[in-house]
Image (cartoon, rainbow, N blue to C red):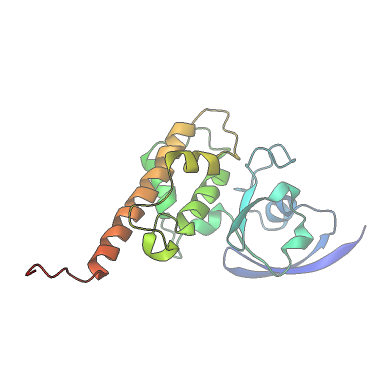
Length: 187
């Protein structure tokens, strides 16, 4: 069995560990670091329960080798909490919208939702989109489609993500409009 040293940043903390070169990132995160929000579901990259954010992009950690994480920044659901333990905006939206049922799929959905919200597409000033542009309902459903929820909580999950995107879009539109020069009303 070959092993390799990997160094990465997990939830804002620098880590260093020796792993079996065949181990999945799921196994590393659950086994070595006890990050149990990373679920073992299908183990073939179909259900999204093992979803993590790597360098700002979501991946199914069950089909991502741990050695590939060397030098990377990894975020699990535990990493969404603020330094003082406050829930993130998307976590609170899941609670507000009742988007948690049995909870097995929730961590993976939360990370996809966090990636969607952080992408900035619903923030015209950040993304270069015109005011009012952003994710359509179809866009959001497509982006969330890589997950299986056995409790059929999809609609509440969708509403939670839509609510955060909408709030951010409204705030971004207002900020953008505040920066635009006033039209001369004397002409």
